[in-house]
Amino acid sequence: MSNYNAPFEIHVHGQVPLRADVGYDQLQEALKPLWKYAGARSLAAGAASAYEEEPGIEFDAKTHLLQICWTVRGDEDFRQSLDDLCMGLNELAEQGAALEVTFYDTEFDEDEADADAEARDDFVMLFVGPTPAAIMQAQRDLLVQDVVNMMERHFDGSELGGVVAEIDKLFTQRFDALVNSLELGKPPRGPGGPAGGHGGGRRPRHLH
Image (cartoon, rainbow, N blue to C red; front, side, top):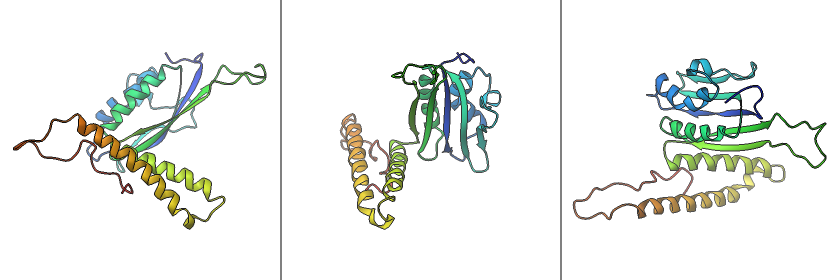
């Protein structure tokens, strides 16, 4: 599956805050799609990156923080491992977080390729979190950071409050649409029926 002749070098990067009650065994199971893809039999054996200078997969038990800076050689089938990884980390995450995944085309030689040929490099941004609201919060925060960083080249940060407010409106609309879609699938609440909040969880911060 993963070997030195693989068409891609795949780099996974990010930090995920985990719940305080998460133990090593739970984390090992959640990260199984990564270390198993690398051909290892355990997290300890598969945590090292293909590059020695990268820290690999690290878990800080004191701060409950999972840190990933890890490269593996592989193919397009790694995308399925990413789906499984997100499902596992959603169960353990304390809050929303982003993971960056970069596919580097190892078979592309710029010097020998035709003038119109392009590398198959690809970049994927993934989000994990305990609830849809937490995931949207992480998406919102990253977008605000990117937009503000770009616009501060031309405007003072104090002038960008309206831009941030408009971004919040967009995410509020998306969140409300998600909540409504979840509510449509629920049976109506009759007398004596179960009470409770909507399936989307609490509204993300800043989204009002």
